[in-house]
Length: 160
Image (cartoon, rainbow, N blue to C red; front, side, top):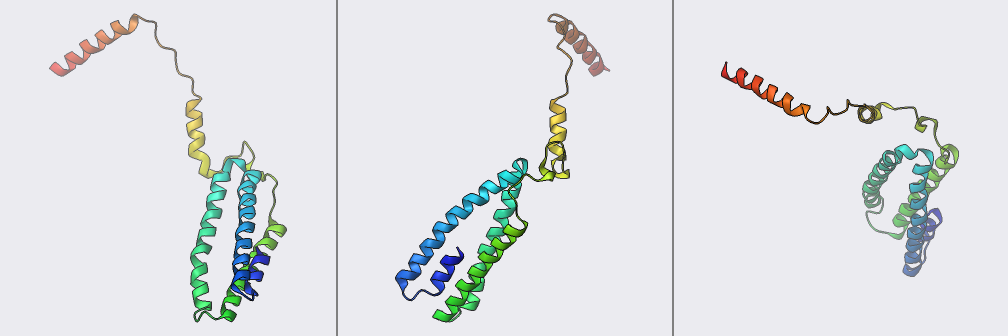
């Protein structure tokens, strides 16, 4: 995507600019695929949460990008748009460097089975409740007699 942004920034005509944008879109498709798989690789149990946080950050940048582009390219000159695409290329390169230095595709220790984070405490309680063994049902025939005794007791309570 860095190459695509720089290609668009230094395009000499509209056809080259559009070709650069197509190149950016194609590279973005491969990046999104890697992003989706990486959340499963590092913490399969929490991939939904991780993916949601990544989407939130991505959407925030999607919100800010047009505002920044409008500020930088307020007059719409070629030089101003070149700056917009160079800034985009720098952001892409910086995020790639951060991932290469700090990122990983290995399962993380905090996502290992057995360790329960505070956020999953309710789910654990539900699981424990589902594992409780209940007493077996009483033999057939006895419940009717028991129901008659309860109804008789309820009837006496209502009369009083």
